[in-house]
Length: 480
Image: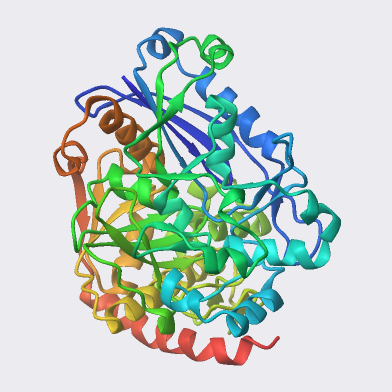
């Protein structure tokens, strides 16, 4: 048995796989995000640990006793700042925090190597500008800083006592030489840091350490090895077999991500496409990242009084696709691809006297779909082929939304049995590879196909004018 733990933004998920790759047990625990000021998004690292313990302990003790290895996945970019005692100096600054937009401009002007070496625009979501913000606005705290860890790697530290990070997660800091798969002294120096502040780098399939005796006792399992693991997106890709050049997926979690595996480093800075290391040796990947996806569903359900996501989808279906003029811009936390704008905010447009909860629900589903269509567009403009997408994440549960997504992006969507398990599935695969070895392409196979949603040509045509209006709306809204 292999345990995968995913440290997400809205919760921690623990999944156990058997050697045949079947999910035999799951446990979850919720997390909340704190927003003490506009543009800020933070979490207490202690909450990750408490939720990890709760998620693991929700699994049957007999299953836990059979675990032979653990893999980790987690939300990217979060800045966890530790002092000399390895305790957090402040709440972690999360991936969807937008406070560092001024620091981004300063870093880009001061150090052009961010584009060529890190392979990405300097955006507020990344870790490096967060540290530059701390250096500027919290200098006394910055002076106490000894280690910077990403969220899953802070949990690793508490599990094993080791400071290590895999390459896929570390690529999202902007401190990595992505082509060479090592820390960049130049990029670290741009934010006043050195390699001494960083964890050691490993591939996702490497063992980084073993459970501490007290944690093994708490969880009722042996002192099993812990694998390097991967970022949530890379782990999600590994879980559904996106492990070869050209394989692609759509992740519908809190954020929306289109992920394409590459056999080389292929940056496309102009289109705000991310180019990172994959969590498997010898692979890289590109991503179009949209900061609000399924989170928009929860938001509109709350403001319209829907009982939850299922009720919201039912209301949207009652209205029907392209049923009204309403447009929704899903920029509740700003946007990355293709706009790189942390300050833009969401909006409803073109409301009329007949607008009601059902049409608002449908507009939100379409708005997220249009944002993802923007991602497909800039990936294709970069020369990347996107001809089908495997779907993972909580948003994969709605076949109705899938029809809207497939039509808006004009791409077939492949739904996989167990695909909603998400990054925790890939995390368990990392554990299996670390413990038993094997070829990733043979171990990390795609789950069986549940169904495929082909783009409905009539719906493609009906949504096209709304997508044009959606694209036209952004330039008008970006300065508000």
